[in-house]
Each structure stands twice: as C-alpha cells, then as structure tokens.
Length: 555
Image (cartoon, rainbow, N blue to C red):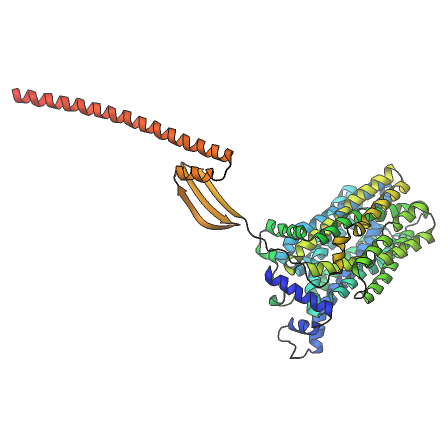
C-alpha cells in the first residue's frame, strides 16, 4: 500500500494547487517529459481518452434517463398497479447494486476498459431482448431481463468511474473540475433524456424508447473501445485486488470503509436519501402526473425542470469549485434540494409551482455529487478505488430498490399524499445529518492530504493439533507457513496448553493425554501377560529338554 498512497497524495496536491499538471501529464506519456516539450498531437492523444469516457458516459446516460421515464410508464399502462411499478424498479436496482460490489474484484482483474466495453454491449443486447420479447413472454420475462440489464449497467457504471481517474491524470486535468463536469453530464442528460423520453412515449410507445436506449449502450461501448487507451503499466499503480483472492479483494473495500468515518457517514446519509428519492422518482412523480395531468409528456416537464436547475447549478459550481467551502455547500445543497421537491407534490396540484420548486432543488443539489466525487478520488488510494467505489455505490444505492418497494406500498396502501409526506420527512432527517455530525462532516473541507488506509497485518496463527496419536505444532502468517509442523511429546503439549489459561482447552488436552497413558498402561499390561506366558512356555520347554537329556544319559 505504501507506494500507491504516496502517489495519491502527490497527484491530489498537484490537482488542488494547480501546479505541476503539465509535468505530470507529460510524464504519463512514454518518451515525453518536462524538458522535451509537448506536441499538439501528444496533447490530443492524452485528452482523447478523457473525452472518450465523457462522451460515452453522456450517450449512455441519455438512453438510461429515457428508460427511467419509459419503464415505469410501461408498467403503469399495462398493469395500473403502483406496487408493480415499484417491483419492476426494484428488479433493476437490486442487481445494479449487487454488481457494483460483487463485480469490483473482476474490474481489478479484467481491467476497467474491458469491463466497460463488454458490459455496455451486453446491456444493449439485454434491452433489445425486452423490446422484442415483452409482448410474447409477458411480465415475468420483463422482470428477468430488467434484472439482467440492471446488473450489466451496474458493472458498466462502476468500471467507467474507475476508468475516469487514469484518464484525468493522463490528460493533466484538475480532479474537482472533471468530477463536477462528470456529474453535470448526468444532470444534462436528465434534462435531455427525460423530456425526449416523455415525448417519444406520447408519439410511439415505451418499448420503442427502450430500443433507443439499447442503441445508446452499444454506441457507448464502441466509443470507449475506439477512443480510450489505458496508460503504460508504470503510469498507473497495480490494483491490490489483482494480487488477492476474490474474497480478500472484497474484504479490502470493507477495511477501507471501516477506517474512513467520513466516507462511511456520507454513504449512510446517501442510503436514506436515495431511498426516499427513488420512491419519489419511480412511483410518486408518475402517479402525480397521471392523476393531475393525465399525459406522459408531463413526466418530461417535471423531470426536465429539475434537470435544468441541476445543469445551471452544475455550471455555477464548476466555475466556483475552488472558492466554495465544501461542507457549507453540501449541507445547504441537501437542505434546499432534498425534502422540498417531495413535499411540494403533497401540498399543491399546480404544475408551475412544482416546476419552480424542482428547478430550485436541482440548483441546490448540483454541488452535492461533485463534492462527494472529488472527496472519494482524493481520499481513496488508487489500488482500492474499484472495490471502494463499488461498495460506495452499493451502500448508497441499496436504498433504491427498497425505495421502489416502499414507495409502491405507501402509494397503494396509504395514498399518494401520505406517501409523499412520509418520505419527505425521512429525507429531511437524512439531509440534516451533516448538521448534527459536524465534527466528522467538516473534514469535507480538508483537501491537503489523502486518506491512508492502515497497512493490514496478516494474522499470526499458531496451531497445536493432535491426530493419529501424534501432537504437532505449526505457525502461519496469513497464508504463509512460517515453519513446518513439528512433533511434540505429550508432556510438552500439555504444558503448552496449560500456559494458555483456558480451562476447557486444558481439560480436553488432559483428557487426550490421560487416554494415551491409559492406552500405554493397557498395552504394557498386555505385553507383561504375553511375556509371562512366553516365559512359562520357555520354562516348560527347558524342563522337557532336561528330562529328555536325563533319559538319554541313563540309557
């Protein structure tokens, strides 16, 4: 861990101070250094990878946001059941979350580039399966195919996030600005994808919209395959997961979260807020639009107003990122952009009022994800990023399938208004956590050092075993055998166990030794009896031999 940790600190410092970016970028290209000069061709080649990742993300997200509108509307039209809406959303999000965690070691092994390309192309196939097979196979097939598509999208999103970091370093770009721009892509694509998706549903049908999403996934994978080239091996630290077993790799991500209380606090808050937000987006908003407006085009207007505010807020944050205090900005953004956008649907039927509140909510939330993203890139060592990002996404997004089910259940059993009020106040409580946890959350403003994960020390295991009548002792550190097992006599083994001051263990060992002694005494007694019998037979033989000799002498 030592070398990768130091590497993260140097690069983060260069990004924050705005110095040395040209040198680090030039050094990332073989044969180009500070003293050689950087040609326009090299600069284009360095930045081409970053541009490719960002363009692929934008195209993929446009399609995803269209399906985000189309899929709930398809279920609502076909079934008329809010519960079914929540069930389908959960069927997508559970594999999405699981793939972010369970797939992280494979991202380390196969590489972020390969996983991104393969997962995007397979996502296109899965979505086309929904489009072509839904009418014939029915609702059950929809759940299966949605789950497959969700898992593949989870892999693609996690791998693309890991792929972004080496592209930032290769281009010599500033981390905070790129993460802000990366988040802005999500905001802008919502602004584009949601309204276009709503209009396409009105003009055609939801399945056609999902077919367009399949095409965007295919285009995203091909763009990464064509434009993105990973740096030379020496330019990027080897992921620790590439040297570990699958389970050890997963455990490394949990180890990081155990030591970084700030990131853990962020994820707990995100879990609760995402739960409420998912219920709002996939159940409450479609129901509100259906009951109040009666047209799917209203989905685009409602989601588009929030996305427009998010885009404007993102542009403003990206321009002022260095001057804004992270803690205050994130806290205020959550309070403005969290509960109000949910509660307004409970208290008014006016579309202009809803559009205004969601627009302001988008402006407020625009800074949240870039701040969290920049903190993750700065605090998480490169060797841990695939696993930690996967766990972070899983921890945060675990609220999404739960939110889908809870939102559907609340709307079905208690009604739309009650569901909005319950989830709105839950979201308000979650977004107040930075206020009540000030001592931990104020570390958001600490940009001077990267968080270092303590070097794990493999456990020392000493084993005293009894098998096949023999006592043996051995020692291992982790998986490494320190010494070959050595045999001990029973007395030494018993004294060793006695020093542990464990009465149960000593009683068990003493029972074994006593049994050995009893067996030895029994064996000795058996041998004595055999020896006595042999001596008796020998005595009889001697007597007969003497008698025979005596008879011979007389004759």
